[in-house]
Length: 261
Image 1 (spheres, rainbow, N blue to C red):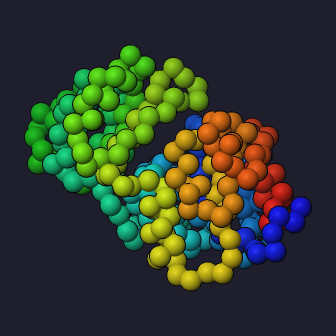
Image 2 (image 1 turned 30 degrees about the vertical axis):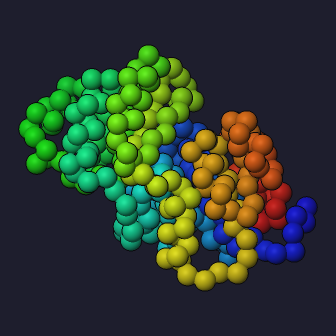
Image 3 (image 1 turned 90 degrees about the horizontal axis):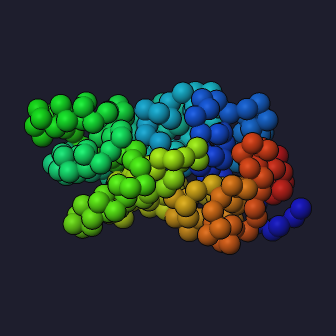
C-alpha cells in the first residue's frame, strides 16, 4: 500500500512487546530477516527501549543493525547499537538515587539502582543503602518491581520530588507492576530529539512502532505511528496503523504495510 510519496528513511522501534516477547532473549527468524531487509534497503533502524544499556547488549549483538544510534533507559541515554558506547546521557545524580532508593525500598519486591542494572532484593538494597550514599553512582533511572497495593504509597513518595518523571505499567504476565523513575523531561521523545540531532541531516519520514504507554512520547517524535496489536487503547487511537501482536509478527506486517521490505 502506498501511504505517501515521501519515503520513510528511519524506523524507531521499541523492543519488548514489539520486536520480541517479554522475557525472550532473541528475536524470531522472521523479525531478524525483516531487520536485515530494512538495512539492505538503506532504512535506518533505531531502537528506543526502556531497557538499560547492559540489558540491551545481547539483543543488539543478535540482530546486528549496525552502527546506528539507539535510545535506552526510556530516553535517558543514547548509545551506538553495535558498541553500546554512550554518546549522550541525562541521568539521575547519585544523591537523588540514594534518596529515592532509601525511601522506596520498603515497597519494592525488586529494585534496580545501579548502572550495572543488578536486580536487588529488599535485603540487597538495604545493605547497599546502609553502606551510605558514597557507594551510589549517577544512574540512568531507578526501576522497581512492586504489587498493586504499594502503588499509592509509592506515588505519595514520588510526588514530593519535583525533578523526576515516573512511569508505572502492569507487567504483561501480571500481577506485578514496574515503575521507572528518570529525570524530569526525560522520555522517548526527548531521547529521539537527541538521537536525531546526533545523527545529522536526513530527508524523509520517521516511522515509530511500539506496544506500551511509555511509547506514546515516541509517537510524538514520528511522522508515522504504528501500534502493536497488544497496545493500549490510547496508543491505538493515535496510531496511523494498528498491526498484529508480537506473537503474530506484528513488526514484520507493519514493515510490509509501508512497503519497507
